Length: 199
Image (cartoon, rainbow, N blue to C red; front, top):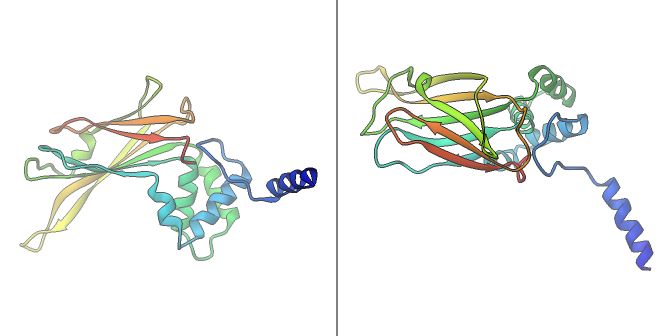
């Protein structure tokens, strides 16, 4: 009886869908397909992606690094799938992943505050790096854009910036990873992620 239960449990584990338990790259075909279906799940995709974003408190002075998002290759497939619901196939998701390649992307949302006002190009002055096991990793690409709101005169004013920073996956391993942000005019910020608990 005990032997038959063990055999049944082993068979069930073989037949059950395989889910990535931690960060990895490159992504296999089955893993890309799994990420694609998570992105197509309108009900749960937002809660899945929420684990990749940290909201940070307002500092006493200076700009407010309000959000830090760490997007792994797996999360990028999920995001891509979620943004292309209608008529988007798993094969297209796999092709998009192959074209994009493996990278880690950090997205920052930085808001200006009563103690600090910046301009449209403020994103160019922000320094971002990754640290893992005392190893400092520099960005391979940085882009950004201002965040605007309407002003009373009918125009627009910048209230902050988005910063998109790309890093190579080379040297990044499963385990704790720290994003270090140096926003001019304010204190340095550190955001910690555990790549053992995200894919």
